[in-house]
Length: 250
Image (cartoon, rainbow, N blue to C red; front, top):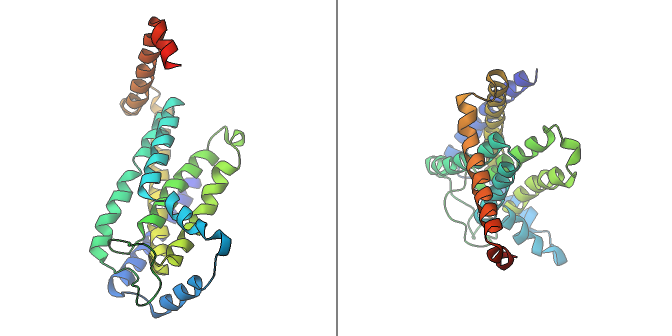
């Protein structure tokens, strides 16, 4: 039943994705988007003005790379090799988005129409920022809520990313980095990749349960985790073999 729901969601999302992409390719911007952006920018944040840079910073390439690396390393240390493999490979759709934006070639908001903060580069549709936060944080949330030990996780571990995703989109418009349709496009593309990721992830987990731990695929996915644990074991053995080094390291 769940697999049918995912496949139905994938088909519906693909239809919406193609529709939005065609509109973005032929329409530089919708006239109402300028008015909407000006309306959003009319709100004064006051003492919360620092949030505009903080929310964008959370989804920036540098911070996203660190979060991705930490999440991958954590899963490897916990021996969740398949989960770590899929988290790390979320880089692929993020990189593919550059080709999509070049094909659509939709311009970003300009300073003569709305206020533009910073110096955003490249084309605008779909928003790579909203795509990334939807796809990456969405997959992390899925791993948490589908985990057998889900109740052991603090609610904030999935609640904060779930709240951050829509707020990040509002801030992209507030800063004049994207039009509303660009942000929605990023959400749609991110959701599409997320559904694909979950379907493939569930299929591989099923294959592992069907063919057991000694299948070729499972062994391949286990390689990074095994190498990491053996490296840490070697470091531990070296430290125990050289007491002086152990004290120095402490």
